[in-house]
Length: 482
Ligand code: ATP
Ligand code: MN
Image (cartoon, rainbow, N blue to C red; front, side, top):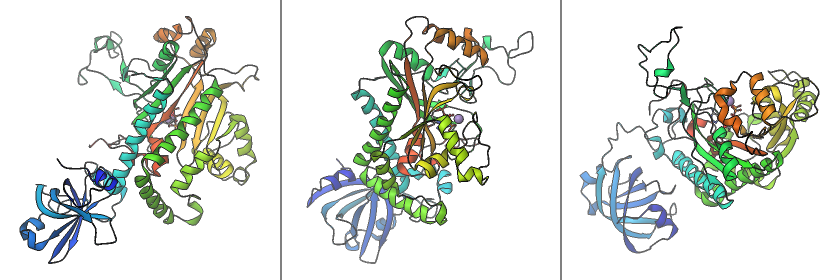
């Protein structure tokens, strides 16, 4: 059996014979000896393979090109060099897979992330992407662990749904109708009665509504699955297919909700620091190099690891939307007309406003609550006793440095009449959502929940600037090659 390179570094079986398998990252040497850096993905560390010319046919060594896949048998020993603690003195080398050195696109030199996105089938073989996807794995695992340890149940919400009431974004339609010649109704509209499900269906934009149904039965649940939004926003923070974690808890008010979200985020960051120290140390260095390329005034004040630890050590700043607007109105940026978008009570905060609050004013994560009712979803619990036109809902959004909104959540409206009225006001057909409304008729209860964008979390933890570089195969407008 071969052994993972990770195990060799963790528990070095010095002076024993080992079998390793992996891909050549680099190769150097001279007429007498060749040094091969081998990586098998189990760790960020490469294993040095030492092949002496006298032991191997020249032809074989020539085929150990960058990108080739090798099986190596040899002695695992302390390294003579200072660059690495161990090495394998090769006795046998088998080429499992050749790589034409002229054609292999991933060379041992820095490649731009734009270029690597076009090589998504191979980019996981680079140091940076290996690190990012190992961190991604550990965070996904930590999410299940966090909730399982606290008595939450994992709910599999559907991916295909008929509910389009979320209003969270544009929908991807799901249909088996013949697009060339779809059946039509008497009025000339497409007749979805003849479609697979007998009505219009789409890919889910959120599992929240189903999670609410489950919370009112199982108590504390969470979903963790892919969500789809056909929003045509080409930003560094939006994907058309992304993963979301949506806990939903019966008997939680908005404060319990905020406490849980803060504890959750800190747990995940701590988990990554504990379980991915080597990958994060590399990403920290990479981040520093990236920042150094920027103009001084645009550089982040903290390094990546510093930032992660800072978030762990500080309470998130909690304030209301109304207070946030006042801070923005009083800001030098506003007075000097530096904001591109206007600031006034009732606006949907733009990313420049969020950045000012998080990065300039508080310099730490911020939880904003009690947003204007008009800019938030219909299911959010309405606050009482407010002036006409200034009604608010118990929403809570968490804003993080660099990534902006990372969590969006709220206490839910549990009152049947209020929910029904609100649905009609915003033009949602209550009949289409009778099942959702019925939970408020039969044993309704106060409850709350939130959605965490998984990729935005990974962006924050890894310091990767573009959301396309934290998901293996990003889906964005005009982009579905891999
Ligand atoms: P934004 O204003 O940034 O578009 P949103 O208000 O549409 O976010 P929600 O509907 O509240 O977001 O979704 C919950 C979380 O899902 C967000 O806080 C964010 O972390 C993440 N998210 C939302 N849209 C996307 C997207 N297109 N790609 C990746 N993550 C997303
Ligand atoms: Mn959005």
